[in-house]
Image (cartoon, rainbow, N blue to C red; front, side):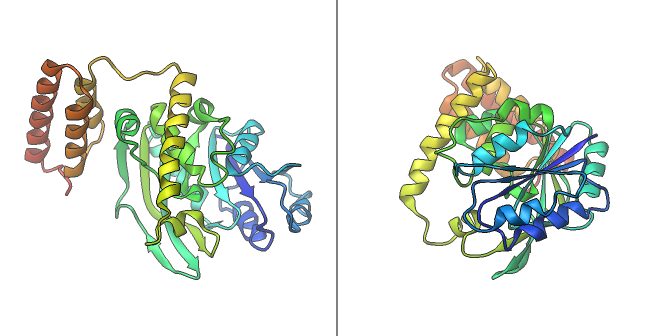
Length: 311
């Protein structure tokens, strides 16, 4: 499997060498590392061109600043890897990140999209793990389209198979997603039918500083107006990706919702309540609504009795 690391950068000249060197110095080497500079106004270009001698490093110096999604677009169009890894220029990989990720993809051949735990460093520290163990998260088309479920993590923990990325990128809404465009990757992968997995090892270092959009959005001072606008942007990219791939919600939504839930080997109680909500709100046919609820309850009993239900 060929691997590509896409590093997106804007005015992070001070952090960029740490990110690039962490990708170069992996225990298993990337086949290619592509740095996309989004017309930085600091000395990023000077830092980037110093990597000219590295055989597996390429770079794209954009002439116009267009935001993070634009950098994802251009980097992906230049990539040749079978698996695409995304790295923000202010973050870093642990030495064995790629080796462990590739072992994971080989062990779980059905894995299309992988994210992992991470370690915070900088002005805040700590280890963040969504789960304490590796998890098969199944498919998530319906719950993403209907309820906007966000099944992923920060940009630098994300990777996906090329056939999934092909169905998502490039996305034209670059003005809408100048920042937080990892949303496009996370939502897009779900919509096009990626089977998602979580790797519990914290093998990415997430730098915390004043310009972290993801970290700062988790503060108590959430900009309600920005979040409101983000929901409309979400609808636009979801509709675009669905149309691009000729996708539509199934005719018997309730039945398909139960089958989607069954792709999660060890579902949580909250997964059942989420799909119950989908069936109740979005299934227009009363017969299938009732049948879906019955099928959901039967599956709940089966999972509960097997001991696989997570709380």
